[in-house]
Structure formats: structure tokens, C-alpha cells
Length: 304
Ligand SMILES: O=C(O)[C@H](O)[C@@H](O)[C@H](O)[C@H](O)CO
Ligand SMILES: [Zn+2]
Image (cartoon, rainbow, N blue to C red):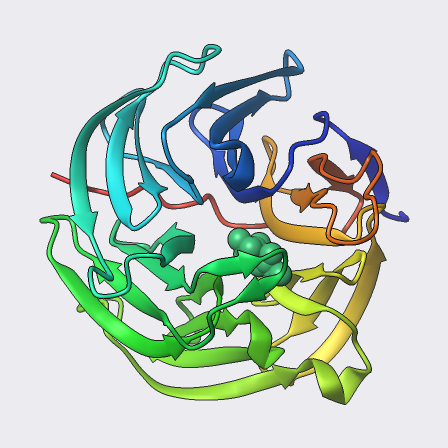
């Protein structure tokens, strides 16, 4: 079966942070530059959004607390309450604040690990379209009690983030290194160690940068190739490029598995006009089927 692609939402400026809520059978994502959190329900086709005061870069449901989510707003992680309707989201409290010494930084990609800890990275200020203060970002782990641990520094743009429990691996990307980094991961402590690069774009003549990624049940990565019009399927254990799947958007930003059987890949994209106009369907969220791969249910965060 050849992969099939369909745009399931209209365009947003910078779609990011897709999270499939398996219990609810709904896809959450953000549009960073529109300041919105978004929800798409495949069963009804309904796409709603709510505007916030600041840049959200991820939205992850809080376990056991219906309609409550951890999101970022610039350098803060906050809890919001949102029933999924148009413009009804309210900030409830601040969970953490980071990078106080670099006030123009903001959060970027983040995920919950298998124990509900939040792994969230930051990035430097975008002072002109596509131009960033480099090496200003860090990677943090924010535990369920709200304690914040700095895991890595000198990061340009934090992206990627997924775990392979069988391999005891955590995968991460600092986008402007054009590589995928692997750490050893201890699920009991949440500690990461021993970073090394397991895949480099330059070895495979790939253009663009490494953006968000997810992992399938075979341990292969599905990587958004920003400025590359595609999603890449990569075997990080062998450092092999397995597949290149074209997406009708230059700025492909992230991907996650969803659907009742977790065999649908939802792919977010952007239409930031940085010199050349990005026309629809660029900026849409796409659905890819027929990939012969399945994901794991996305983890919730467990903030107390
Ligand atoms: O998608 C992301 O992870 C960031 O939020 C974006 O800002 C892009 O990485 C950046 O625009 C690349 O040039
Ligand atoms: Zn990203």
C-alpha cells in the first residue's frame, strides 16, 4: 500500500507540537506565531483554536485532569484549562519558568516521558525571520513536583524528543547541528547521559534542518525535515535513511502517530513567508496513512 496524504486542517502560521490524545481520540497542536492552541477531532472534522497571551510551543494533557494541559508561554510552562471550544482557554497557574538570564529566549519542542516528566527545550531569540541568537538554549526536565533540572546547554533550537524504552534511548535534535543525537536514558530517574550523534543530514545529501520527530514501535524515527518538503523515516540504530515521504509544504515542523490503531501519522507544517511566499496547503496539518508503521500512545504529564 502506497502512503496517502490528506490535509485535515486549514493553514496556520507555525504549526508545531502535535500531541495525539489517545483516550480522547483528538489531536492537539499549537501555532506558535498565531499564539494559539489547536484541537482537531478526526471523527467530526472539527478544528478549534484558542488564543493566548504569549507563544505556546507545545500542548500536553495533564494526566487525570480533564481539560487541563501543560503548555509553554515564552519562557514559562503554565497550566491551562481548555474545553476545546473556540477561544475558551484560561491560564490557571505557572508551573515553571526558565532561562531568566536570557529573557528573549523561548521554549520550543517538548514531550512527556514515559513517567510523565516534561522534557522541554528552549531556543534563542529570532531577531529577524529565520535568524536566531545561537547557542542560547537549554534542555530541561521538569518533574511532576515542578522541580526543574537543566540537562543540556549551548543549544541553538531544541527539537525532536522521543524515547525508545527497549533501547534505553532518548533522541533529541539541536536543529542547526543537522544531526540526531542519542542519549542513554534511565526511565527510573529520568536522567540522560552519554550524548552522541547517530544520524547526520550531510551523510545523506539532505537539505533543510531537523525539526520535530516521533518514534514507531520498530524503533524507527519519523522526522520532520523543515525546509526540505518531507518527512524522513530513519533507523537510528543503524544510522540509515529508510524512506523520504514528500509533503506539500516546505516547512514541515513535526509529526506524531494517532488514530484508533496509532497507524496514522499526523504532520504539522508552517507557512512563514521568509522571502518566498508559502501558499496553501503549506501550514496545514496533514494525515499520512498506509505507512506500514505504528506509534506508541503519547505520554501525559503528571504535574501535581
Ligand atoms: O519549528 C520549530 O521548531 C521552531 O519553533 C521554528 O522556529 C523553526 O525551527 C525555525 O523557524 C527554523 O528556522
Ligand atoms: Zn520544532
